[in-house]
Length: 413
Image 1 (tube, rainbow, N blue to C red):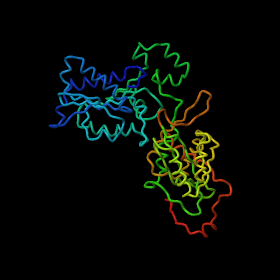
Image 2: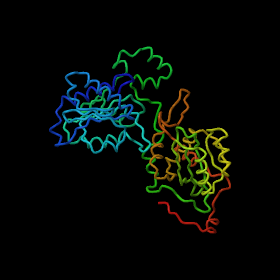
Image 3: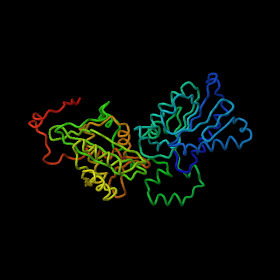
Image 4: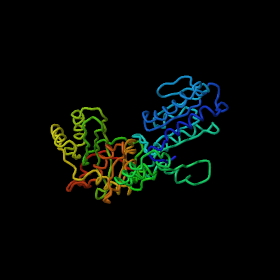
């Protein structure tokens, strides 16, 4: 169900859930002691409770249905017929171990995970086996559309206006809910036509595309490589993304260049400290790591003004402000990724953040690359910053230098 904002999607899902929970007999598919579960899955529990509240209101305020409620709390409704309506966050791990008779997926186009590059597909893959033994089990997905990618976009392309067992429903806000003011929608279209077409017109956005394909990123990951130790006679570079410690992470990446012309990039280390934390303590930790790799000049963004320069200077590290903004770093990093001239660490959050980056086309025609709304790119930012740069002039490791220094040999497969 691909519908605009305020179209009543959550209420429709709750109504169908109550009908299936009460008026369909699931007992032939449940073993003695087995419970049939109706899963309500959303970005977080707070959002999932919207559907749960609708369902509880329908069951508790309709007299003929109230007698089916055995007990309930803020996240679960257990019915006398062995059916449980339960909410959960969007995670493929937490759907396992249940017999699912119905799954309600809310705002699936906006699911994000720091540990997965494609959480919507993984959750669907985990849900379907949980529904495999229940004849007539229903999978219901409702969302406002977003970018032309992900499970919702693929389902729309495959099933829209096609006969079969899957129904693809697509309608704008006013078609579903005429009580929404036309003036509000008209003002939204005037302010930002692309956004309003998605929010109210149920049209997938054409101004947002994926920055890099997931298959490209995964092919560059060296399995089982989580960090590389510092090697003698190898010049390293560092990039840091400082933060105040309240919302985003503070991150550090270290890498070096190999090959003729130093055109092959190797990611050696990634550090992330999630909030809350003490910025001064994290600077001290990062400074020690930089010195271990013989790095005494680190690059970072302009956040914090003079603060990061002073703090790193206290630990003997010179902090230089990056000459280019984040979008330009990502733009220069893309051909390096596509040409397979980089080795990435086996770091799930890095992979997820790179795959979640979005390329947006502004009204003026200029592209910007950044994380999705509500997402993060702290790790991806420092990795792009350290690997999208060129080795500074004069820092060239010759064969003669290598022969004169005893260093461990590391094979690259």
